[in-house]
Image (cartoon, rainbow, N blue to C red; front, top):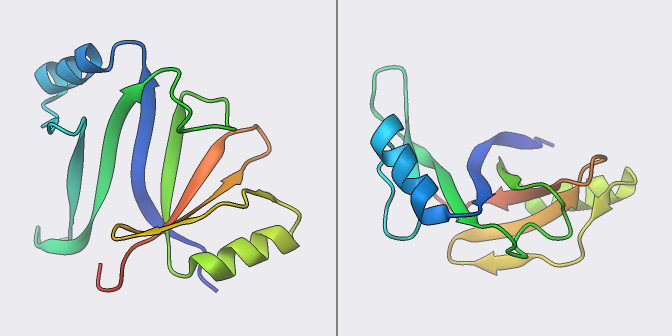
Length: 128
């Protein structure tokens, strides 16, 4: 079974998300969209679209989005078969959160790493 196949997104909190988004836009050229982040489209070696994107987003510090993790960031990893991976992680003694989410954006599940960081696992919708 494949486990992680790529990074789907990087999410982090800031005390002043709007100011930090503006800083990244001005100084690093990140095109921050109205929803608060950017999507970096994947390209192959020839520069052609490769059928995926990595999301980058800044949210408000104090949000419960990363709970029960304690870090100010969360990394979203792409996976091929979320249900099988969550079963394997549970069998290996990992702390897997009971809740999952199945939406138009795909299937999501979470595991807590040994340092207390919440890790998001994402199975994209079919065809993505």
